[in-house]
Length: 224
Image 1 (cartoon, rainbow, N blue to C red):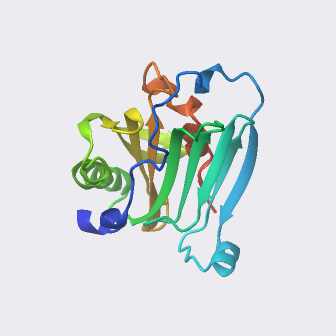
Image 2 (image 1 turned 180 degrees about the vertical axis):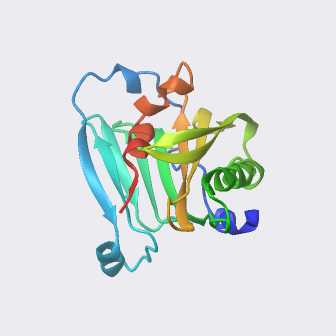
Image 3 (image 1 turned 90 degrees about the vertical axis):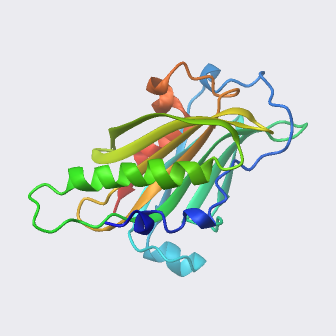
C-alpha cells in the first residue's frame, strides 16, 4: 500500500484550528462542567450526498455532544475531507477555540492472501500518519513533536493513533490526535484530525482524551 494513497488529501487540508485571534481565557475549563450532555446524531450516507452534493463512499455516523456553554460550528464543506466540527466558547467578547474534529476520507487497501490483514493495514496507517499527516498538520507551528503511536479501539474497531503537541500563536499549547480507522471489510475508510486547546481543556494525560468533546465524538464513530 502506498502512503501517498492514504494521505492524498493532506495537502488540501487547512488543519489548523479556526478561531478568533484572541488570548485564551482560563475562566472556561471543559472538565469543570457538571451539566448534562445531549447528543446530536449526524449520518453521512446517500441521503446526505443527495442533500448537500458531497460524495460519501462509505456511510458513517457520529454523535456530537451538545452543552449549553459550548457553541458548535459544523462545516460540511471543509478544505479537504468530509466534515469538520468546531467547538468554541460562547463568549460575548469573542469565541475562543476549544477543539475541532475533522473527518477525512482515506484508503487502506486490504492485503490479499493474509488470514489477518488488519495488523498490516494498521502499521501502514500509523506510518502514514507519522510521516505525512502529522508533519502536514503542524507545518508552520512551533514546538511540534509526536508523543506516542499506538493501536487503540474506536467503538469496537481497531484503529491507529498518533498523538502529538504543538503551539498555536493564537490559541497557545495544543494537542493533536490523529486516528486512522480502517473499515473492517473495505479499503475505503476515514481518518480523524482532532485538535485540542490545552488551555481550555487541561488534560493531565492521554487517559483523559475520551472525556474531551472530540473524544466523545470519536467513541461514537461507526460505519453503517
